[in-house]
Structure formats: structure tokens, C-alpha cells
Image (tube, rainbow, N blue to C red; front, top):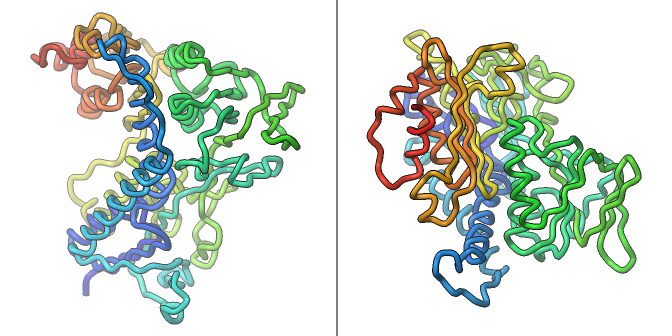
Length: 458
């Protein structure tokens, strides 16, 4: 009998695990209550980037004169934008579903929960679909993701006080938006709504946006925000929101400062969706924050029960979730007994889809100094790039981190157009432990933005 893997959650981690395990010969059942692709398709990665693309086109139209174009009367068609977001998400979900079904994966619409260490109960999403089904599983993957963190004071109504999941797109483009939270999600929403025409205020709890990122990178983004009219309220911690009789809201900060707007958007992180999964019945440990701690094979304390994606408490990136899903499938099917590379979270590339884009991978400059590690840092601005000038967007830079003794690439940051694509070169170098010479001696296309990578490697 083939190994039966039951996967609870059809996001990036669950989809990749299902596809890989089925390809390796497992019997796979995937349980998903909404759409295949999960929150990434419904509310997070895909819809937000679709709206950011529209915002980017709006921003480009404002710079059109510098490119020799005279554009007038460009405006947002909110209904068309809403349809575009829905269409992209639904097409991706349908594509994922067709692929899995073609590989023999059984997809069940419903909610899964553990009844014991080897039993999963599935409650159908459709009440007419019959009674709950109980499956026997050789292995179980929990990949249920996370949801926005909402403090008690927020009083979210989905109309004027929004979470990120109320904004794809909202019922109307806010005239004056107050964003609470200056991490990755918060700054993406600042960029998106500013590009779409909103006035935006950003409440920053510390003294820089993106507090976990390179200060030089954060400073570049702050400069662009200020140039485009974003109001930064630094060192402020939101503690209340007041609705006004005449409409709009006022966000109250701990130090007494108040920030008024037509809408408030909450972007202060997420919490894992681990409740009501029956983890306790299976003996699976959950930490105080609700995450399922896992080892390098993504195993919980119960060896045949795995966790991947946001619920595992590792990097909350769709790409990481997918990589974890693949590793889980390989482990379930015994491939870890052969030559096998563990997932190195420190070498995962990430990107922030602001304008300019931001991307990084590997060791950061500030982190190296904090560790007392000797590094070589080279920085080249895109202003030196012919292609950046041609495109009319010479903002930003490439920063490359390497070992001064060996020349091995340790990490890098990019601020600028197409940073999310360009970081792949540095990511490959970090993962493969290549030397800077491997980048510097590669003959690249001219003119191209990637030439700045080679210049930084010289």
C-alpha cells in the first residue's frame, strides 16, 4: 500500500507538498475549505501584487513626461480593478487544482482536524455533502497559514477600519488613509494606496520603517515616501481608533498624538491558524504564540505530523512555505536517507514590492557588524546604469556582502526597479557559495540593470 499523506491546508506549502508527494508515489488527500492556493491567492501575495502593479502603472503615468509622453486623464476604474484581482486569483487557483488532480491528488473541500495521531476528520464545506469523513493517515501535514493580528482596540468593521484582507480592493479608494504598522506589509500598502491616489499617513512604532531591515535600505524607502507626500509619524504606538460623526477616523497614539483620516488600515503582523485543529489530541506541541515548532525536516514533536508555512513559525513567505512543503514530501517518502539538503532559512531571498522595490538575501551588513564578523561591502548606485537612465528610474543601489578572506558572497540588498528579479543572482551566489568573481566575470547583457550587480562584485 502506498504511503497516505493527508494535508490540511491548500496554500503554497500544502500545494507543493501534495504535488511532490504524489509525483513520488504517495496517496495524497488535500483538505482545503476555500480555494486552492490558500490565503496567498485569496488575500495576500497575489491580490496585493496585482493592485501594486496597477498602482505602478499609475505612478509611471505621472512620470510619463520625463519619458517624452504626454498623458492626460488617467484614472482608476475600481470595478475593472476589482475584476482583474478576482480573475488573476481564480485563474491561478483553477490552474493549481487542475495540476493536482492530473497528478492524482484527491482534493476535499472542507475543514480538517486531527482526531488522533493517525486520524483526520474532514467536515465538508457544503452542508449537503454528507457527514464528516474520517481518514487514516500515515503522515499528516498541517499547513493552515495565519490570519491578521487584530488588537481589541481596533474595532475592525471592514469599511472604514480595515485589515489587509479588506483591501483587495476596498469598497472605495480611501481619500486619506492611516496605515498602522511599518513592516513589510504596511509599507507595501502605503506604496499601493499612495500610487492609487490616496493621501497616506504611516504610523511607525520605532524610528525607522522596516525595523528589521538594513537601515540604509529603510532610509531609501523613507526618502521616497516623503518625496511622494507620505506623512511619517515616528516613535508612535497606536492604542485606539475613534470614529467621527461626520465620517472618517482618528487614530490615537500612546503618547497622545492623533492622526486623522478617512480610513485606517491595520498591518501589525499575523497570528497562526492553529486553533481547533485537534493538535492536542494528537499530542502535537504548540508554543505560547500558537506556532507548531518544527525541526529541519519540518517535523513536529510527533515525527509523522509535520507543519509548513506560517503555522510553523519560520519565515512567513509563500516561497519558504512551498520549499517546506517540498521538503516534507521528500521526507515522508524517505528521500532524506539519500543525499539531501536541508532548507536554510538564512539564505531565503525576500522582496518588498514598494517603489522602488526592495530585496535582500543572506547576511545583512548590520547583522554582520552586530556579530563582529569581518565583511567586505560594496555598493553601486543605479544612477550609473545606462538602462536605469533609459527607463527613467535611476533610484536605488546594489549592496553586496562578501567574505574578505575567501571572496565568497554572503548576502546582498537591492533597492531599485526590478529588485525582486535581480536578487535571484545574489541568492544563487549565496546558496551555491560562489565567489564575487563568478558574478564579476560573467558577461552580461548591455544595457541591463543586472550590470550593476557585476559592478558591485568587482
